[in-house]
Amino acid sequence: MSSMIIIPTFWTKPEGKRKRTSRTKVETPYGNPTPLNDPNPPLVRMLESLRRVRGLDRIVVIVRTTDPSLEVRADEKVRDLLREFSDLNIFVMGPAERGSLERRLEQLELHFLIPAITAESYGATRNLGLIVAAVAGAEVAIMLDDNEVIESNDFLETALYGIGQSFESGAVCLAKTGFYMDEHGDWKRDESGDFTDSLWKPAAAFNQAMVEVLKPPRLQLANLAFGGAMALHRDIYMRVAFDPWIGRGEDTDYLINARMLGQEVYFDDQWYVTKYTGSGGDPLTRFKQDAFRFVYEHRKLEFAKSQVDLQQVSIKSISPYPGDFISSGIGRRAFATGLFKLLKSDDRGGYFAAGRAALSEASDYARENCANYFTFQRAWAQMMERIWEDVALEPLFFEGNAPDRTALTGQFRAITGSFKAID
Image 1: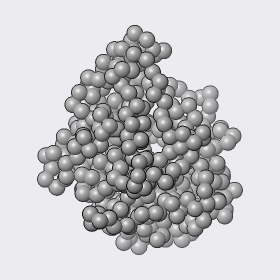
Image 2 (image 1 turned 180 degrees about the horizontal axis):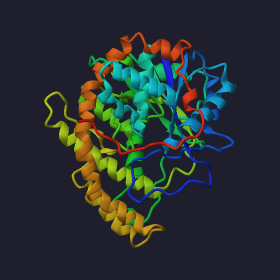
Image 3 (image 1 turned 90 degrees about the vertical axis):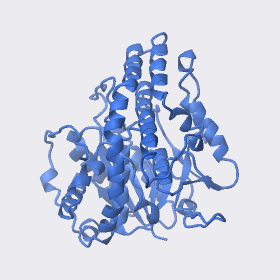
Image 4 (image 1 turned 120 degrees about the vertical axis):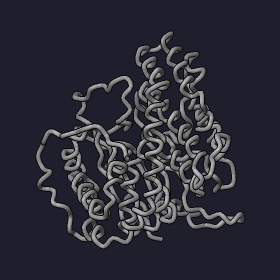
């Protein structure tokens, strides 16, 4: 079974030159991006660990940045790092390759899909990886993250375990997820907090959900997923896309999208990766992004009820996590938490602004982009079929006819604009 490992790597401005984002901005959700001047980038550690894995085929590294003006520098940085890994079969999807893909989509009259695969989001980045897998004809796309380490040489065998397996029910495992361990061998999330968090305890709900899925059998239906430990057979990744408009939690959202389309993601309790999360990101940013994505997820579930071609996904079926946070009152819970934080928090104003945004901006964002996703999803399978059969993309990417990158060298000020949603 041919496989392709897909690793997105996210970069940001050098240490000492980064500015804090606005209190309610959610357009750049990348947590813990690598500073361009980091002397020990996590991507190097990840690739070194892959050297021990038996049976590796192709590896795709997708370069993304927190600022479009950094794309060329980040691309050059990554390619420079990869010179030390000539023993691995690595393809880089950088700005030049994305440009070639966009031009080919325009030629195929699929230009209206371009914003949904180039948006600054985890979902759009994952979709780029799936497109490369389709171009290469990979039977299984295995997704990892650059801040992970592979501990065993039989990792690939474990990752592919069960893919294609039929169950007594007649269902077939076309997608599965593993889970993360930290450097201390622990999967639990920190539940510490105080009275201001009494209405907002996603970590506790997550831990409760993990206790359930870690019980036998080894493979069982998943209620949550991990984007840095997912294996997708072509029969599902050709049909189901990641949501480019969800700001955080694109992995569990993929599970929900698949279920709406009559597919399931399974949880493998023997498959894990070691993940180095660093500081875990700014708590305020995480709260803000979670509030937006839970409001958005609720909107998607409600919207799907009006669509005859989609199966219904109940909140109970994905509880306690994320189901306990996908309800009609989630915006009010976020707002109440923001009020509580006014009593005791290092950033009272930031939490209050984020809670208030969950009542207004988050709902507006969900209404605007929910329909966009379903429009995109309905076109995804057609696009992927055309890409799978396209005779131009594979030689362009994999047979030495790389895009001309000379026009991208140097540092130019990026021309940016607001993201235009699909009509």
